[in-house]
Image 1 (cartoon, rainbow, N blue to C red):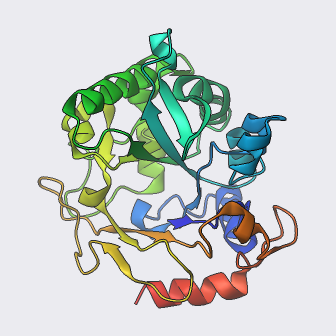
Image 2 (image 1 turned 90 degrees about the vertical axis):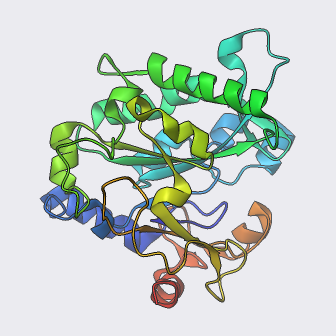
Length: 292
């Protein structure tokens, strides 16, 4: 998985590879860990959600709506969530945020921009990466966030099925204990939604398919694109799922800067013509460096 630069749209070469593979079904027999997925950073913080609000536009990391990002070749979205008790409607209390800026409630965003994509693209496999804010050292807040997160995956429907029915269940007895399932196997099982969370407690309910990121991933530090420093789990070859000897997945961050504005100055071309920091020449060298 490659998590792209803030404010940068998509990486052209990766996008073309994924489209070619999807068009020819060339990835069907590849295992999940053998395929690269492009993940956009703060996918919800975009100009579409911001509208004409100056502060929301200033805090945006992406130009396009999540639906347009997915249609343009992004196959993973990263979402920052936070609980807002001040909302009268409980369904609106789980918020999508970027720092102090609110971009709307999670349930509405999933209904409007994620579920339609999954419904119209029956072979699509999508990754969601949740970062949870505001619950540090507060078990009640964390519990409430989890309850609302489960509610979203119960209520949002894809073809009449709740989202939780589409999530990948690593404990499913049909999977080989030695290797990740193939793309074709995932499609046939209709387990096409991989949900990673930074809270281990959220993974305690297997019916929802939430995966603790540190149980399955290794990740490089997000700051800068010159080196490739360990954020967590470098040197840990396998996942820590019970009775699974699968290879650990690599989540690669690729950010030049600390703000979207800074990042935009280092990007060349429009959304689909990645250049500069998002160009394949620079990204390819970084991939080779990080996978060593």
